[in-house]
Each structure stands twice: as C-alpha cells, then as structure tokens.
Length: 388
Ligand code: PLP
Image 1 (cartoon, rainbow, N blue to C red):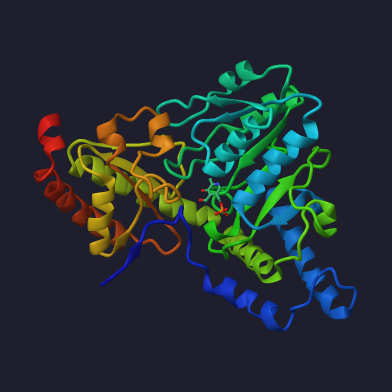
Image 2 (image 1 turned 60 degrees about the vertical axis):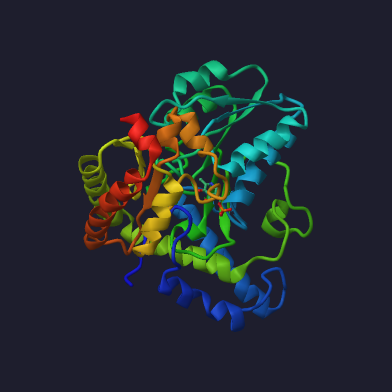
C-alpha cells in the first residue's frame, strides 16, 4: 500500500544527506570536543562550525547559540533559567493559552514555586493580541513567552510586535520557534527576541538535538549542572553526530526554505478548499493566512477525530487529531478548547501537516478518500443526526 505521511508537525523523516553527514561522527570523528588532544579538537572544530552556521542563519552572534537535547529542554532552560535568575526583580511571567506543553507545564511548575503566570487568551484564530500583552505587564513581570507558530493549528503569532513591547519595558522575551525554525525566515533582531527554542527533528534532522538562542546580556541560570561545556550554560558531553545532523538540516533548509514554503502554501490552500467545499459541516481551525505553510487543521463536525485518523491510516494516510503529544488522551486538546471550538467540532479535529516530499498527488488522494470516510462515519453517528 502507498503510504502518505502527513504528520510532519510531530516529526519529520531524516533527510538522507543529513544521515550521510552524521555517519563519520560515530566512528571517525568520535572525539569528545572537550578533550585537548587532536581527536577531541577535531570534533570541537566541527561543533563550532555548526554553531557559527546556525548563528548566521538566525542573524545571531556565535556565542549566543547553546546546543541542547531539543525543544523541550530549550523551553525549560529558557523559562526556568530566566525565572530563577530574575526572581529578585519580580515573579510574574506572561504566556498564552495555546503554548506547547513544554512551556505550559514549565509555567505550572513555576506557579508551585512562588511565580505568578498570566495565560493570555488567544482569539478564535489562535492569535495573541499585542495590546493584551501590554495590558498584562506589571511592575513584577520578568519574562514573556509566546510561541512563534502553534504546532496544532499553525497560527503564526505577531512576535516582532510583542518583542518590541517587551524590549520597551525591559522584559526578557522568549519564543518557542520549534515549528518555524528551518521553515520560515527568522532574524532574532527583527523579532526582538532574547531567547528562542528550536529542535532538529522538525526540519528533517535527528531527534534529541536542538538549540537555545540566548541574547548576550540575558540573565539565565543554567538548567544542567556539571561540566563547563557551552560556556558553563549547559553541561554534558556534546552530541557531536546530532549537532552535525542539525547543521546539515539547517544548510538544506536555507537552500530550499523559500521554494518549499511557496509549494506547500499552494498545496495547503488546495487541500483546505477541497475539504471545506467537499465535506458538509467542516471548518478550518487557525488563521486562514497567518499560518504555517505546511499546516491544515480542520474539524469535521459530529465525528470523532480518533475514528477519522484510524480510517485514514487504513488507507495509508498518517495524520493526527489534536496534538500528537496529547492524542493519548480523549479530551479535546487545550489548543482547540482555547480557541473556543464547541464539543462537537473540537472532537472532530484533523491535523494534516505536509513536508518536503509531499506531492500534489498526495493531496488529490486525501481529497478522494476523506469525504468517503466522513460519510461513512456520519452514517453511524447519533451526534450527526441530532446536530442536523
Ligand atoms: N514546542 C513545540 C511548538 C513543539 O511542536 C514541540 C514538539 O512537538 C516541542 C516544543 C518539543 O520539542 P522536542 O520534541 O524537540 O522536545
């Protein structure tokens, strides 16, 4: 059976060129970059080369890039690290209701340790209003953390505007850019961010490696204690193959990002149009325009998203309902609840996220199969009959 992978927001296949770049780091360039001998120093040179490449990709300074184990660690480090370093100045943090759990759970943890967190309401499209951010700031606000783009509904937030407000008020600003890094252009100065999280496995790189950008002068207590790696800001022996894989993924993204975004935007809009026109009681979740080029999130009213993805899986199509990270639970995701979807629509959500290899043919196939599945499920759905 032909398999169509439409769950790139959860993770992406590693590009074979990334694998090729990583291979020598397991056996040939295997040294510890902290060792003083030539074998170690060769590994160090390679790690520093990647750091410099990533810094230039983000318009950052080389020493502002810290290698981490991925998005979750970067988010935890940024938020807990700044909170702890700034606790004598204040204990208030501002975030939004649709952040990834890596941010929300970190904030909840801090609430148990004396911090006060404001969870801003997002509008129906998932957008944070910069004026709401301005109004939420108090004399005790030490950090604002708003994601660059949402992993479920794809909405792209007004980060540059929020960053300007944070800068004017002298408050540190973090953005979780896990879904945009390598997909949309990012200039940390244009966005006015002080901290930015990214993860390799969302851009055809390996799992278990990411970065945290930390602007020079940002006060942050290290999260990992141990050796002196990363200038004492993140202990542990460098994951050299992972870092090299991330570097190669960034190099490939830099070359193809613009063209890919254009292609995916056109496929995305074709898929959205096809679903909304071809299936009754279907709605688009997230913003129609300010959205990730690869993200389609729709709700098919009166049917269970879980059932839709199981039927699609049988047809060879892999996708998600709500967030892949929360799909083990039967509750509608916190994101769909936050944008005010009614129960009947929140439960019928479907997230299709495209990638480098997605073709027009794949979209045509989904548009052929999905309406048939929706009809079949509705014919046995008591909710559907009641809702009509
Ligand atoms: N932040 C966002 C927006 C994500 O989508 C994810 C992963 O799905 C993460 C953070 C966590 O990243 P990682 O899997 O690298 O820990």
